[in-house]
Amino acid sequence: MLKKRAVTWILLAALTALVISGCSLPLQREAGEGDRMEVVTTIFPLADMIARLGGEKIRVSCLLPPGASPHSFEPTAEQARETARASLFVYMGGALDDWAVKITGQGAERQLNLYRKALADGWDPSGAIPPEERGSHNFETRHNPHLWLDPLTVRDYLCPALTGALVEMDRANGDYYRSNLGSYQAELTALDGLIRTELSAVTTRSFISVHAAWHYFAARYDLEEAAVISDFPGQEPPAAWLAELLDLCQDRQIKVVSVEPQLSPAVAEMIAREIGGRVVLLDPLGGAGQPQKDSYLNLMRYNTAVLKDALSKQ
Image 1 (cartoon, rainbow, N blue to C red):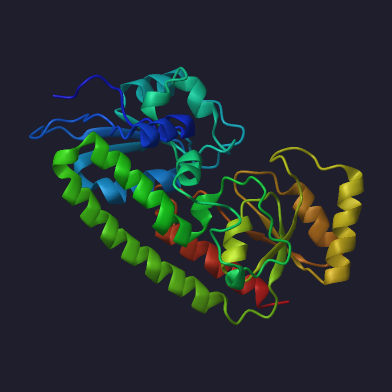
Image 2: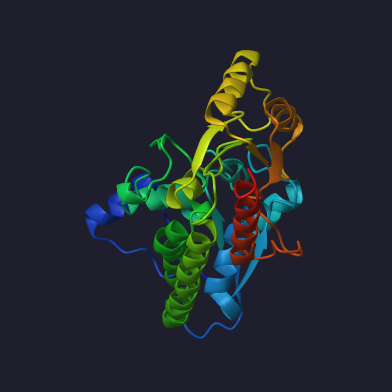
């Protein structure tokens, strides 16, 4: 029988305390329990990953509907109740979807904050991608929570963190979850190889984007997200910055401007007209039932194909 809903305590301060004390997290599920563990996530890529890792042992749902932005989403009262019933609540963190904390009543013991978990496990924005692999000339170590858009960070940090949370909740099925992790990691390795092959021969490697979602993806695959239209998704950029952005594109001969289904394309379309460039639709989130974007793996294949086509036609 499920014990009370306390689950993995992964916030950084708590994890540090556990390491120092040598304590292990408590067993949350007893062997022999037949019902599936309820897991709630904020965004679709996380839901798809944990569904692959949890398989038939879990039931997972996603709070963010297709087309919505996690930066500005307001969950409903029913979604808050759904989250309260779940055994494990997973969110990205890092200011991407921090409304997640509000709807769980600040209950740190019920949450898996993947950004903080990755940092606690040694993931470092400046060290996650080896210098020899960084194609982005302006690679920065700035705070950026879009870790899932780098498949190798998913393989090496996010999925092991998710698997660890499942194992802590259901140790009797630990081997099952770890086996699923190994299989999924092999698929992520293959995805990385596909992306490298597809993008290796593009004729230009720089683009600008509507917001800084593609920082790690670009750095991993020898591309350059040369600038972002707005530092705060959904906000109009200052006129002075737009003038600088147009000058940058003209000086660097940048012709590709990426937009996203979750954000208005109006400013990007204006910039593309001014520079004689083209707007391309990249999607950082995807969603169940969306053609070509109905799994994390398919979503990344879709984005790779869009970028390959755009960067090969300049």
